[in-house]
Amino acid sequence: MKVTGFQTTALRVPVRESFVGSVKFECFNPVVVELSTDEGLRAHGVAMVFNNFHVGLLKSCIDAVAEAVVGGELARWAQLWERLRATSMRIGSDGLGVYAMAAVDMALWNLRAKALEMPLAKLLGGCRDEVPVYASNYLWRDRSIDELQREAAGLVSQGYRAMKMRMGLKTRNDDLKRLVAVREAVGPDIDIMVDSLWVWTVHDSIVMGREMEKLGVYWLEDPIPTHDVAGLSEIAHALDMPLVAGENVSSKRGFRELFERRATDVAMIDVQAVGGVTEWMKVAAMAEAYNLPAVSHLFDEFSVHLVAAIPNGTWTEHMPWWEAIYQDPPQPKNGRIQVPQTPGIGFELDRDAMARFRL
Image (cartoon, rainbow, N blue to C red):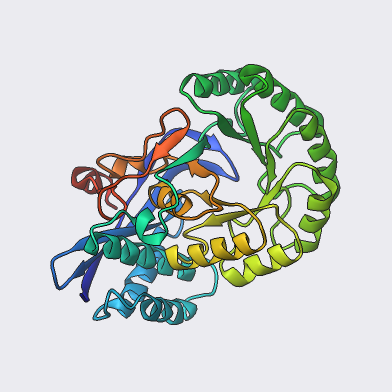
């Protein structure tokens, strides 16, 4: 079976309510690439930017990279990935070039699973049929303490057993007060992950981390910039709770340094940032060799399959930023998502929504 063509569509999906993470988020811009074959199959992959930032450039990059796989045999996955890598490197070894490669690689694996009439998770390994998820689209930096408590309690009532909170814009004391409030709202048995979005120093991270440990925080994520591998290693060795990094690392080579220097206790792998399903699986296998768990970042329509496929997969991040483009998007129940058992990823595009959000 050969790839015969592709189509890309840039979208603008507004947020239901703006929020402040690393920036103020007002819309998301998934760019969907659909590949077709000589036997009539069609499947998609996706990359994204936000706030209309460089969405046109991302679409152009995906168009350029997708050309590299037209005419290729679907079964030659390593050959096609090398074509993608060689083409995307001309755009850049990080950023939009890698994002474009990822979107096309996702579409290729979606196609392969459809061609074999298998769920992607089973094609990649089939370790389990459901994955635990944590709620990640809540507890943002701009929420008041009352809002944080209401949101956190609401998540527990929905069946979530874990949730992520962002910190890092307030003083240490203010941030700790907010964390205490969330812990009071959810009780002692709910896991709280804290993400400070790269804004602290090594010293801040250790001081705050020790206070978080007293409150039973499950992990500390991205306290300092990921390129400071020595600093991450120092933090990881100073704290008892897990340190998590990796969501913006763009290749297995970048993760190798994190693993070798014990600069993260968990491999957080973003399928877009790392270059697609092919590289995600390689990083997860390397993490297993270092006796480390692997978790996903964003893209839960694909990530539920990736985490379910591997023996060291633990958490999937549930972040429904563009769920409106799917007919039946991933929906957690009691803190877990069932892996679709239909061929491919099992989440099909909503054509009416695509038309409504198209740029």
